[in-house]
Length: 75
Image (cartoon, rainbow, N blue to C red; front, side, top):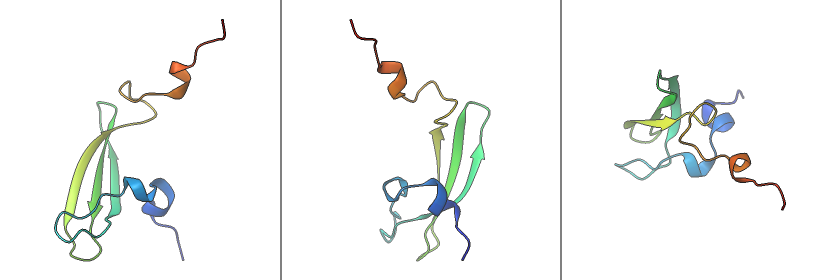
């Protein structure tokens, strides 16, 4: 059985619950945007409700905290 986008890219915590039936939604698509963010579309497997969210791209965004940015050399 082939892997879906949800299996590869998202942990269960990042998959939002459906606003209608509270079932965990599946990732349907990811579209990169010009402002270093991603438009993610989720679909509920039970009631087919669709939700779209815009999130900062973790690789290119300045808004995401990176652990390496906060590490300081020992004194």
